[in-house]
Image 1 (tube, helix red, strand yellow):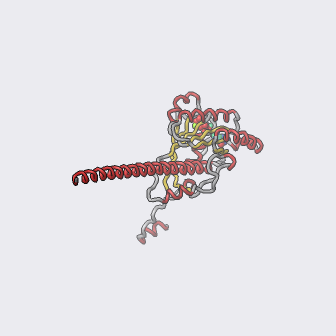
Image 2 (cartoon, rainbow, N blue to C red; image 1 turned 120 degrees about the vertical axis):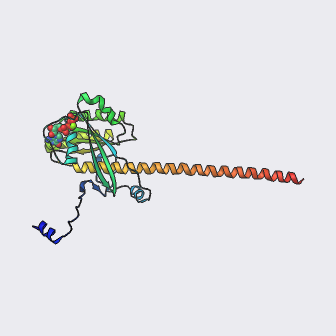
Image 3 (cartoon, protein in one colour; image 1 turned 180 degrees about the vertical axis):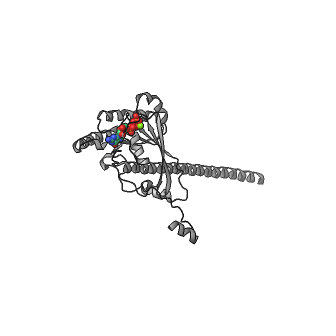
Length: 278
Ligand SMILES: Nc1nc2c(ncn2[C@@H]2O[C@H](COP(=O)(O)OP(=O)(O)OP(=O)(O)O)[C@@H](O)[C@H]2O)c(=O)[nH]1
Ligand SMILES: [Mg+2]
């Protein structure tokens, strides 16, 4: 009925409004899972240099950030990515063949920033090809199943393997425990203590999550995206400052050489003049 009324009165159809996913719009730095278990920023907001850099007329050029998920088979890598990207959970296990790929777009402090998520296969038979996907990853997520203690030891090996292949400068490292819903409160706390020690040995930020219940999934991905964004922009600023400093040094050297040549030729000309006069 309202539709007919609109047609009869020749009212313009309202514009379609695209609603942005609030989970991917970030204005502040999300907190770590635990401030005691992170080697990264413990601040409540982005670094002041980052905000300053973003206000300059020269905007940073942001390439998609490569994130790799590694860990034993069936620990829940795919479930974690799917919960964040599609808000869905499948209880039947379908092993990843080789690698799966997802792209997630964020808007951080008004800038577009994409995460390229490479969800690798944990099955042994794919290990030889996985190395090819590890190169140039800016973030490594080492994943273990909180209900299987041995998968934590494997996560350490997966991480060290990924670091061997990685050529990116100091990737951000996360250690993530999945399937938190399967543990009792006591088991959960015990496992977190053990994993917390492992995380500090690995110099990784620690998170416990559950793809089934959605526990801390959004918070984890938001923190990952925000830290990656901050690191990449600050690295660009550092590189830019280094280039400017090198250019300034080159200009100063050039100027001092010009000065030397002038004084050299000036003195010769003076000598010649005086020579002519006598
Ligand atoms: N209870 C519970 N089950 C989970 C959770 N996450 C994953 N699972 C289950 O664990 C099984 C394996 O999950 P996947 O995400 O496919 O594991 P994966 O690490 O991607 O495995 P590969 O692709 O073989 O490396 C599936 O049956 C999931 O339903 C969770 O948070 N809680
Ligand atoms: Mg998988």
